[in-house]
Amino acid sequence: MEKGEICVLVVEDESDIRTLILHHLRKDGYSAVGAADGEQALKIAGERNPHLIVLDLMLPGMDGMAVCRKIRQDPELKTTPVLMLTARGGEEDMVSGLEAGADDYVIKPFSNRVLLARIRSLLRRGGVFADENEEGKTLTVGEIRLVPELREVTVNGRKVDLTAGEYKMLQILMRRPGVVFTRNQLLDLVRGALHAVTDRAVDVQVVGLRRKLGRAGRKIETVRGAGYRIVSK
Image 1 (cartoon, rainbow, N blue to C red):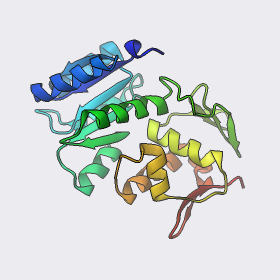
Image 2 (image 1 turned 135 degrees about the vertical axis):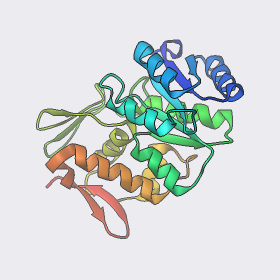
Image 3 (image 1 turned 90 degrees about the vertical axis):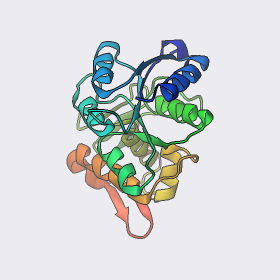
Image 4 (image 1 turned 180 degrees about the vertical axis):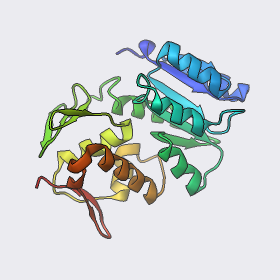
């Protein structure tokens, strides 16, 4: 898909910041639309079905957390990558954003280069456009099957809906079954080396992934003091 076909929705109540983000997105070749509050964002998202949503945490009325939860409840939007913007860098705020359904976040103030890199990374993980270095091989571990070409994960033939972050983490683990990945390795591989978040954020992603995989989620093992691995048994 060409960049000009990719729609990014920017939800930010501060008009100067919103205008600046929209400017850089359009300059980089994306189609971009803005919203000043949560209600407007949900209306536009329902009409435009954007490929990615940049969502400010602190919004008037319905805050970013509530907007993100509603997005995840919408069948048409629940897999749309969400990049949350926050001026609060505390661990609880970051983890709360991930638990609400955000795939990644950027702490204000941020550089435009970092923001664009995060957006591209999320779009690539979500399969909107391909990474030339991404392997397209179908992966199978026990009853879990991952098809990169379709960005589809199934368990015993049942389709499993994953966020972009959960999908990427599962793909990393399935490419090297039995290999233990540390939390820092997973952070670098899933979110990119530019993004520093806490170990707990990885744990939150793993808990969500296991829950969605059902009984097959037990194949993702915690290696105490080390990290995580997936096993074929």
